[in-house]
Length: 137
Ligand SMILES: [Zn+2]
Figure 1: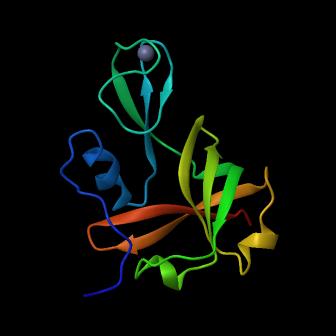
Figure 2 (figure 1 turned 30 degrees about the horizontal axis):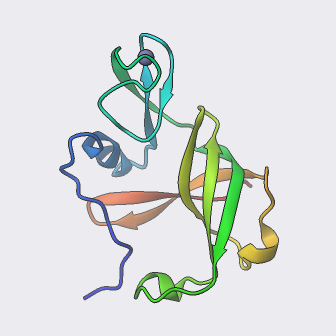
């Protein structure tokens, strides 16, 4: 069996549209058309007014590193081959903060800086892609 990242179920009603969009490498998020609240992660109701109609939007894929931690040891068959790697909160420009990995650096213990600009990059899988970030070029 291939050593792969644990992948989400694609038939969850709240997140299925999000994962479907990743096949086209689009990072989708929701915004309430009634009160303007940006909603992350995908869900069926507005977290601002608890009512309202949610609409899907596509992120530009740019953001800022809010915080991160470097994982130095893992026993998982996929993740143990990646250490050391950065688990990070990224403030995406459209106004939501997502948990992800920052990749594209040789040494995350010394090459990441809080506040640095990041850009979206996709880890490809069959049937979906995983949104990750790397330092902006
Ligand atoms: Zn609302």
